[in-house]
Length: 383
Image: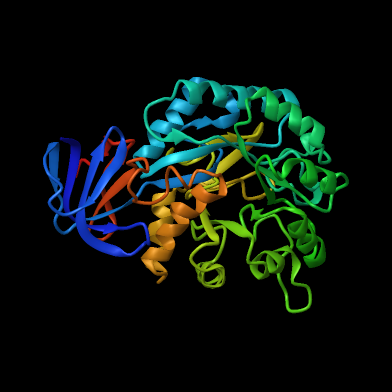
C-alpha cells in the first residue's frame, strides 16, 4: 500500500510534457506513475488540476526577516518554512561578500542545519556569492570585503564545511582567477559574476571551466552591437547556463523573453536573489552589513544601487507565463535546470520514479493549492 496517491491530475512528466495520470508516493519518493496503481493510505482526487515538480531556488540570501549570513539555525528554519509556502521545496542559502570569519560561520551553520534539517524546504548546499568579484561591479556587495580570487582560501572554507559549497561566484578578469578555476572547477559549479570582463575574457573563462552566470545582465558588461560583453558571451556559449531574476524590475519583460528564447529549454535558471525583506512589509532592511530601503517591493541601497529582490520563484513563474513564455519552458527553468546546476538532478527537479516526492498542485490560473515536500503535505492554501 502506498502512502499517498494523487489521482487524475495533469502531470508535467519527466519529459516536461503534460500527461493525464496518477502518482503514487512511498517513503518520501515517487514510487509509481500510471493508472490503476492500487491502494494508498491517503488518496487525493485532483481532476482539473496540475502537478509540477517542486521549485528549486539556488540563489537566495534571505526571506521572512532572516538571512543566510545571520549564521543561525533559527534564520535558516525561518527561510525554509517561508519558502515552502511559495512552492520552493529545495534551496541553496547564499552568502554575501563579507569577512572570511563571517562566511565560515555561515557555511558551518548551513552544514549543521543540513544534518538536522528544519521543516519546510530542503537545503541542498551553499551558493557562495563573493568575495572574489570585481570592485567596479560589486553592486550591493560590501566594498571593504571584496578581494582577489584565492583558491587556497576557498579550499579552506570548502573543507571546513564538509564540501557543501555547490556554487561559487567569480570575476574572471581578476588576478588569480585562472588558478582559481583550475583548482575549483571539479569541486563545484563556478559562476561568472559581478564582472567587468569583456566578451573575449568571459569566453576564455568558459573554456577554462566556468559554466554558469550569476543573475544574467545584472552586475556584468552588457551587450551592444560592437561590444558583445559578458552578456553576449553567455548567450553565445551553449555550455553555459544563466541565472535570471524574473521580477520584471531587474530585467525588462521584453529582455526576459528574448533571453529565454535564446537560452532555450535547458540553459535558463530562474532565481529569486531575494534578501531578508522578501515576504516582509516595505521599510528599512539589511543585506551584507548594509542598510537597504524597500519601497513598493524594490530594494535599494542609500545610493540607489539595486540590492537583491523581494520576489520568489512562484511569483516569477507567474510573471514569465503572463509575458507569453511557454509554461513548460518556464517550469524547466524553475526545477530541473537549477537542480542540474548544483548536481542534484538525480534526486530532484522532475517527476520521475525514484526521485524525491517534491510536488506542487495547482488550480487553474496557476494558483498554488498544495505543496508536497519529501512525500508529505507541507502546505495547503487556505482558500
